[in-house]
Image 1 (cartoon, rainbow, N blue to C red):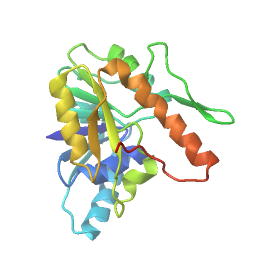
Image 2: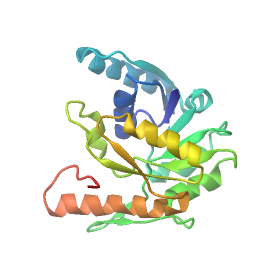
Image 3: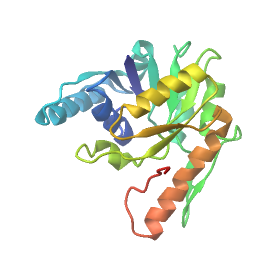
Image 4: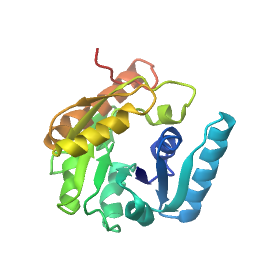
Length: 216
C-alpha cells in the first residue's frame, strides 16, 4: 500500500514517514521537491542507524497525491484550503485528515470553519468519490519523531465509509502501540478535533508534555 503525505516535511509529516516507511511505501510530498528529498534522506539515515529498512520517495505534493492509495494531509489548518486548491487527482482515494482548527489567546481553543470541522470542510473541497477519514488528530507532533518511545495512545477514527474506515483503523493499529477506535461518521470529527486544544491546555497549565488520549 502506498501512503502519500501532503506536507510531509513538517513535524507530523516527517514523523509519520519515520513510523510508516518500514511497513509501507511512503511518498513524502512538499511544495518544493528538494525539501521532500532532504526529508527522505534524513529519515533513511535515522532508520538505518536502528537497523530498519524503509521505502521512501520525495516528491511534490501533487505527485504524492497521484501515486498514493491513501493520502494524509499533514498540514496546519490555515494551509489546508490554499493547498487543496492547487491539487487534483483525489478521485477514488482515501484521504486522512489529522488537521485540527485551533486558535490561541491566553489559552488554546477550538475554532472550526463554517462546515463545523476541518474534516467536513475538507470533504466539501474534494471530489465526491474521495473518502475522507479523520484520524491521528490527538497525537502530539513531537511524539511522532521520538522513535525510541512507544506511541501508546488511543486514536479515534471518523468516516462515512465502513470499508475505508476499516482500512484506516488497520493503518493506525500498525503504528507502534496505537489502538484505533471507531468514533462514528465524519460529522463526529468535530468532537475529536476539539479534544486537541483541551490536551494542549492541560499540558500547558499543568507543566506537562505531549499529553495524549487513552481509552481503558
